[in-house]
Length: 275
Image (tube, rainbow, N blue to C red; front, side, top):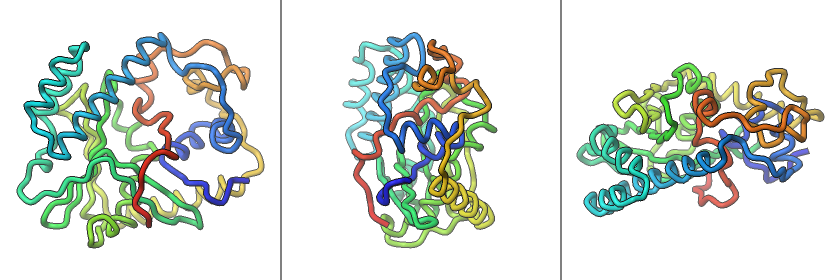
């Protein structure tokens, strides 16, 4: 059984959708298994740091840190890629972020109750427009732009707009209608080609039903079977534990098929706004 204070997120829901056994090992049993997800390890770690550094720059910019200071940080970084990412951001960041009267909320967490459980979302950035529209921006630092159908099929694309619609009033001081919400995935690898997902009441109802049923299924589950699709096992830290290989999959293929920034978020360490 899950502990009563268990918190569902897009990350652990995606893990369950990918492989119920992975969810069980990672979140119910909290198994620490000493295996890497991708290879080569040093390049994987470098890419993760590069992504983290870009998120830091975008976060500080949203907080009001002067652009010249951030540009100097990016250009003086040992990796020239960070400077290139930053200049792409300056040239192609969503126009809504610079609109008159916009309110920016970087790195904020909201939570709501769904089917008797807590569902939380940690947003890279929320941009609230004076007319009531709210843009969710999620920075993606993949080597290549992921396919649109895979992005839209991910739990994140359901969880983020739903949580904002349900809990946004606690942050913004007013309700957030579903048709006022837009989710934008912005890619350092394709800064002029973001994935923009409009929202609305029909999608909210569909997502609420889907996620409530999914959460109920997980909470009531007695068994957590291995996935029949062995492709994700190449990038799973538990692959040797489950006897599905002992060699990590290549980083370039991982970034083609998965949202690189979504893995291994430490949800116990983030601050939050209560529902």
